Image 1: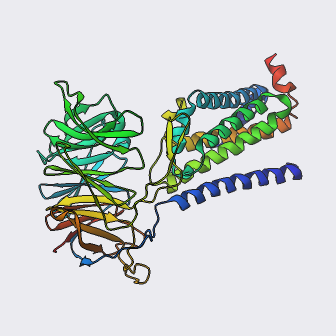
Image 2: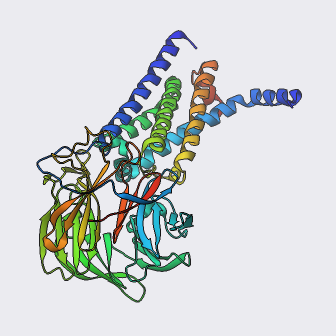
Image 3: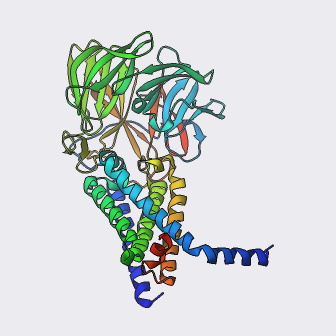
Length: 351
Length: 163
């Protein structure tokens, strides 16, 4: 090869590498921050610190979501795979494969059926289906079909779900009650006036007795309504972020995207014993995370639902591995289960 | 064990058919770029949507990126087609496959989730299969680049063959 050609070849390869480097830089700069958001303007009070660890299950490094507890067994799902891991109290792990009818890449969420703890509700919104999987028999028990797009289904009864579905415009989703006909095909039984804007109002939706609770990912808003959708009440988490991320709509409204990567404020939520537990990503003025070398990696803010969602205090969890943030958590009674990339830790919390 | 007479036979066969092999690889590469660019063009929104899902394009104008990518694929296709620019076409094809392979490597190594791949027939391939596919076409591009050099790619070679 001639010298001129060689030089051209090397320069072109270098340019390609620079392009790849820029893509990587863009990815890193938009990654969920390893440091906490430093909004400030509020203080936390300690409700618990260095919790007593009861059990620790070692796992292969991955991305896991805690499904729940069924018959004293902890069920976790390895995201984007068909693997359900059952953690027994005697510290043995069993892996169950989800059936092939379920595309693991389309699983949005898995939860334990509140009416039968051996059944799991598997939300595959992109496939327009909710599967019910019998964990003891290892096979599908039911398939609920939707011919409209839905988000964040929560069981309302044995044969109905609360969920958000597309409203008058593509980016508005209304909360409603969905029931099913004899062929398990969904129809909207009741539609509320409660709506959320796609993406900017994204969040976590759960049911507690007669209340439906929606916690926003990107600001401090908690929306609570009753199961008849008669009243809608807003509460605030303790952090001070009230703004919504900015989006841009392209090509006649066919695509909406964030202008910049949104910063998660409230990432995880759980409800237990009339308390609301929120894993916040925002640093308070009195958190000394950067000073204390044994700083905790995760906070769980506790709110008393019976006292108008008033802030009760914060559970601080010790660092498991540097830079490894809690992926999911679950609370039942005084047991707090925290999920990390390579282990599941069971704590006992008392407050 | 290496059977020298068979190797020599193969070499002779290859030397007899090298123009046909060259032509086959040349048009295979041309067809691939034609297919890739037109399939993206016909389902532009899906392609942009897939780029939107990638964690490496957050905050970037993916519609513009998609347009640039389709344009570069069309340009490479045209470069490969025309006699005087075929070598440049092979070289750019190699670079594009190099970029795609690097991008897939980034996805597999760093992305917290694996976004959807491209559309068309190739979407049946997994990301790892895509890497092998890209490496194969990188090799084909670079072989064509050097082969064309040896044949002094003046365009006559494969056009005469066709005639």
